[in-house]
Image 1 (cartoon, rainbow, N blue to C red):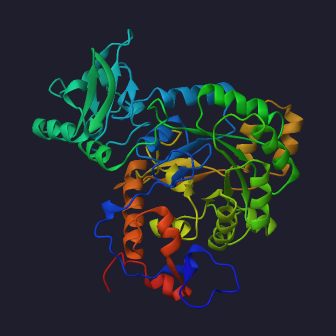
Image 2 (cartoon, one colour):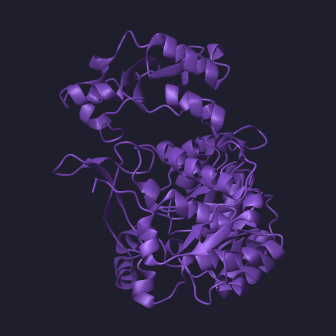
Image 3 (tube, helix red, strand yellow):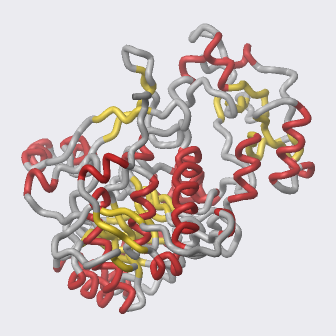
Length: 479
């Protein structure tokens, strides 16, 4: 990366900078390869943050199917964490994971899991586990909420035979010929997944992130206290592909000890450690065994660290410095937090990040954990919270005595409850991925880069005023 003009002497946020177009021979966005090349096996430089309100097994599987990586949070109970990893490994790669409910469940139950929009649906299984039909999500908007799902089964909705859909193009053609947007996929009388016309197209465009056994990849986080080596071994036994050692202040002796202990196990998976914001901290963590360093203190939407403690660093400069240090050591960085628009993802990659972690932006999606709620105006949302907030502390230390838990809560910080609204036009994490990757691919073409490594080299970055940033925003209404 080069600055357009003199390099600044002060730290920069993503809003402070912009990409300058350069001479390019890249003729199509589809000529761009977004694989991060960080050893994780991802084909997309997008990582879902290890926040309880962001990444659960379903979002992780959906993201891996499109090439990204989800990190299950350390606050999950160990057995739930292992079960979540195994669930992701058991999910289909060529098809979407079915949303399975009972014929006796009500419409109101379904609406806590999916919005009444086109292109998705619910698969019904009877008490014996046999396929009992499917219900289009769009149908849920026009029936009473106390109606049984079993009474809404559309007998004309076709089920696709797996052998008839060898690839996404064939699936799209079958759905298009049948005049439907969504259908279950069956094999041997059993539902093995679902497909929509949109997901069929995506399966052609996005190479999945899969392991050596062609199963979806999954990451999981552990803390630095207690027995990190034991937890890491348990994750590896469950089949995890990447282990993230995570703490708010990664530049501490406790992190280095935990990282060294896990690295000594030689589990054969990449180790990610953080969070830090300086080159010196990167060197220490790489020396202790990390191949990827997580960068960012305070830029997240749910984080109050900077306002509470004054600790942190503007994210663009933090990524720029740490990525350079990591590159010299043969390591990589993930830019964690602070992205609000696709431009920010592109700028993080321009600064040298291998991948970009996204938190709250993904919290308001169909696939994120938690139930859908509607506000007084009928707008759908999910609840999100910071990982140092009172709510997170209560969950993390629920096994402590009431007194010890109360002590921990005295020092909690961060937002305990925030409504993250679903975008009516982009309710799925896949819809957001389409928007993000469209923008990032275009950024690469403007820079004349076909790969992430080329983008690191060719990106030309300028500095702008607050007025320059505002000038770049589209007008929601006319003059």
